[in-house]
Length: 52
Image (cartoon, rainbow, N blue to C red; front, side):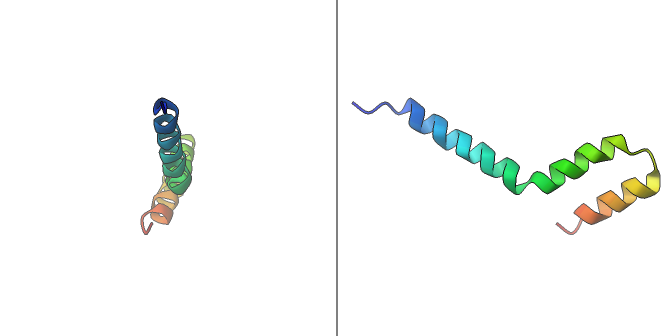
């Protein structure tokens, strides 16, 4: 009999990987946003992500 647990785990892992891969730009900007204190730099980062 075919065990479906590894198949579903692989599908879930692939889905999470694709989510992080395709949304990586937003995650990177949001992490850098916490490190910047200058309002002009923060505004520039938000404006760079806004069209996407």
